[in-house]
Image (cartoon, rainbow, N blue to C red; front, side, top):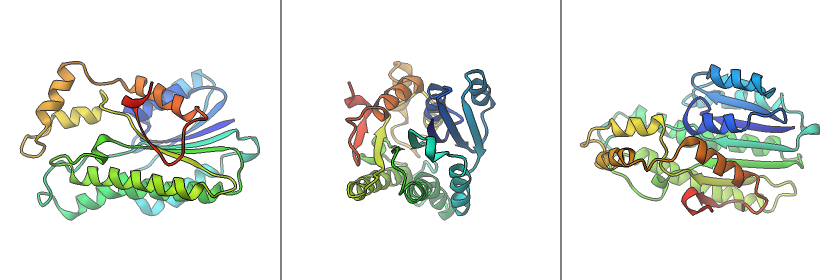
Length: 251
């Protein structure tokens, strides 16, 4: 059995990943703020076992309990693969620094950085003695490499998560039962998040017109296309731990 933990599974890339993994050989653990009943229905039609958890990653204090519940449902004696995909994220606040209250900074860092760090730490701790294929994917962004006006929190969180990926990859290279970990930049996709970006005010996000034109010119990738490319990367034995992969650099 292959076990996949997917955060932010209700829409966009997370939903597309889940839908592409619906198979009787897989057991999915989907996590999002709101449950997606369509994914659950599709899983039933395809005889795929699924556990769905409604959870807001802004509440980091209960993450250990969440991951404990998930790992209690994994039969490691029959596990071929255990994979976690940290996809949940928020762009907010979309404003220049100094234009929003402190709690919005805290919320952004909780969801985009602290929550995945905690999940990664618990995943490694709980699978230390497990010898099956183990992998963690952190969904990154070009914003982790390039500063964007009005995206200070989001850019900083993604940059930090990429560095954390590299550090964990280095540490795991010395482990007898290593966890492979990568960051993956999915590029610009046609998702609800992109819709939110296009609704930004120019004084809050200076590049809003560029993102509007990308949509008008049909240059946004579909979540399904990106999900398929990511799964190819996950299943490729040549994928190297600790690396940042960019969809635009994949064949």
